[in-house]
Image: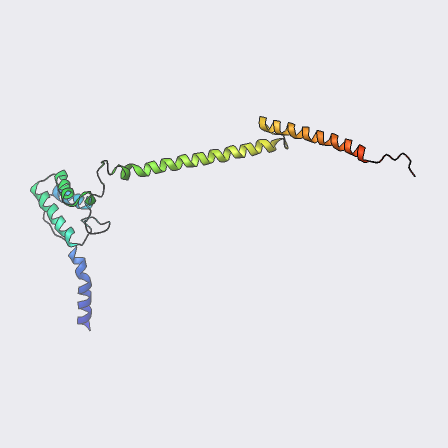
Length: 181
C-alpha cells in the first residue's frame, strides 16, 4: 500500500518538476535579461502564458533559444525580432505600435471618450427637459417661454370667446318667461 501511495505521489509530482529549467548564466545581468525576456514573450501554444510560466514543449524550446541568444550576447531587440520573425506578433504581450495594432493601444481611450460624450449629452438633455418642466410649473401654469406665453394667450382668447358664445346661447335658449307663477 505504501508503495502504491509513493508511486501516485511521484506521478503527480513529475509535471511540477518538468517546468523547472536550470540554466547557468555568466553573470546576474544575463540572468535578469533572460527572466525579463521570458516574461515578456508569450508562449505560442498556450493561452495567456508567457515563456517563463508555460510547461509546453515549445516553451521549453524557446526558453533554451532565448538562453542561447542571451549567452551569445545578442541584444534584447535582436532576440525579440527573432521571435517575431519566427512566430509573428502574437509572441509579444505588448504588441508594437503599427497601423494594424493602433486600435489595441488607443481603442480603449477612444471608447472611453465616446462614453463620456454620450453621458454628457444625455445629462444635458435631461437637465434641459427638467429645466423646461420647472419653468412651465414655476408660476402655476405661468410659463417663462415665449411659446408658452403665446399658447396661454390663445387659450385665454378661446375661453373668452366660448364664454361669450355660451352667454349669448343661454340668453337665446332660455325662454323668456316674464310671467312667473
